[in-house]
Length: 113
Image 1 (cartoon, one colour):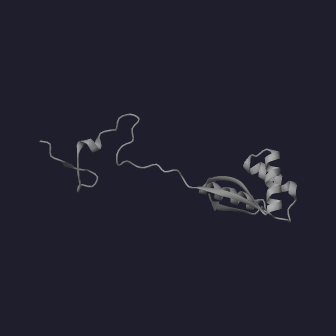
Image 2 (image 1 turned 45 degrees about the vertical axis):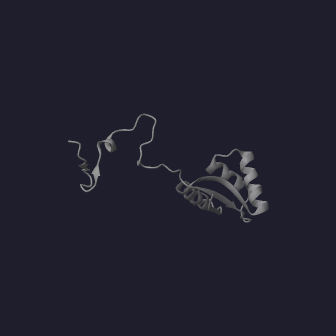
């Protein structure tokens, strides 16, 4: 009576009835999908001496929604040290930021966090 039955999806591996029952509320299922956080990447602003410094500040404010003080700090950091980490985010969003900064003529890059 209590024979293992074949899983309908694969028709090859025996599956017990316990594998098809839902886990208790608040508990992770055994063998279920494991959720891993997405890897994060840094968006780095590089120095571009040919651009007006206030243009850099306005562009950073527009694209990242930083306030003027933070955008100015990022601009001066990139001006003096050659680079400034603007933010960290997942890869697709970092690529979008790099494209948007490139459209404005600013040099940015992506680095793993």
